[in-house]
Length: 361
Figure 1 (cartoon, rainbow, N blue to C red):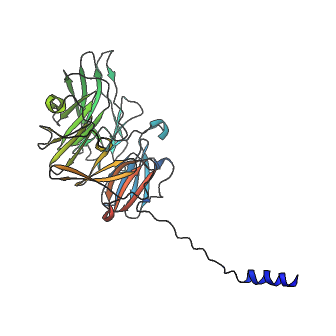
Figure 2: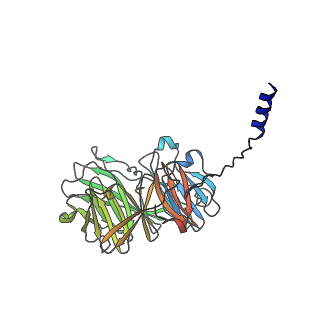
Figure 3: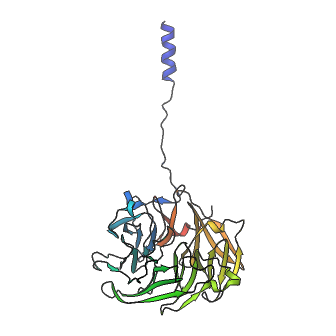
């Protein structure tokens, strides 16, 4: 018995005590912990200046101090809560924000930065409808990846508000606002589009973009370019090129304007005046990507994956970028502010040093 006890004692006394050191796991992309709750359900973003980034969902805008990664304050866009408003992004620019209000008969318009404290209460723009009992009335809600009511020169807004299928007539309001002190409507005039090309107006999504100080929009299956005087050009009138395929996305690279629609990529070298087919996307993944102009660069996203798009000769080149830390987070926008690059997602704001943004996967 004594011998056994000695063996047990020797066995336990010879065991070394192992110290465990836990090294925190770091990722290429980090989450901004200053946002919480519904603030983390983000649909869009815009750089206000070199140090402030505005991020938003359909319910509110949060302003983030980019250089030391802390939110400043939150303002509320519409009266409904996040869950009632859905995934409807506001149109954010550095100076003006446009949002479809709780009531689809109103547009909410206000200065983007500090609207409550510096710019007064938002204005609500309501159109004057026709007497038609058959037309569809109200401002269309934007889609998840297209805010739908962009602003030109901080003062022009183009807003479709009525569609009469019987008369084949679409009516839009060209609104001019003044932001010199508060946000106020200076004037508005109707832009009426009639005799749409075959197959005419039909049920379909609404998208809108601005390039070269002109509006480009797709509404009820038709695509147009409209300037700030209200002059309309039907893009689908170039039937040989578009073949009735309305535009779903637009972006620029160098001096070229690209448009994506129904499995084809189109290109214009004269600011959207004339077009050619650039690439048929059948059998490729190009058609499922979301494209973003960020300064002079173009990025594309698919779910949580980020890629850089460049023009090499007559070919578009796409390179997947390092997305470590973004996995399983649906990307909704990309921006740069201060020393960081940011992506908004449906589950938070993520950032990394701008110098490493183009690190390949």
